[in-house]
Image (cartoon, rainbow, N blue to C red; front, side):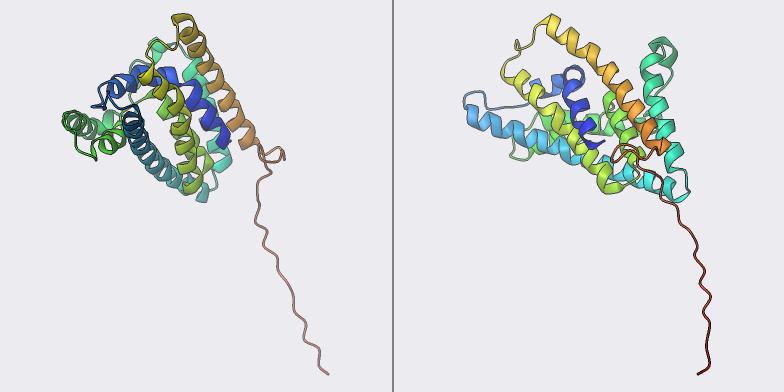
Length: 236
């Protein structure tokens, strides 16, 4: 399941370029020194991974809390179904779906600080921009966060989000160094693979929730049995 996050991030990189690409292209990079430029990009991506890891940790705790209520398997099935529906339901029916509406004030603050950071050239600029960038709303991030919740474990949830972020790094870095690396046809083909893979991940979470006894993919649920033991005392 964790490797699915890496693949989701890689296949969704072109989508990430559309959402986060403008920020990456606006980074105050040292254009004259390639090694310095690469290091600055590394710090920027590291900042994104930190924010993704924290998000995964937080949402992993949410999944852990739901697990304590005994709904972990049902949750995994429900999240898998939601992932599939988000792909199959026509976009016009989802126009009013804004998961981030309750925290618009916080997001506006993040965008404001991000704008300020883009104007600076201090050593911590790239770390700050990457960290704030990770909190901006993105459809693929929502999908990855659903996965973090379904895992029901803070550490695994954090790792899931970090792997998702790592998956986005190769294409985003390549695009900054060579904007013409991917043609229109190649981009179109990769974008078509993203929803297909999201559906595959959705099915994987559904199968996981069914507890079919498949190692690593769909382990059987752990049941706690109360065992009572009668102790007999024998007189010598």
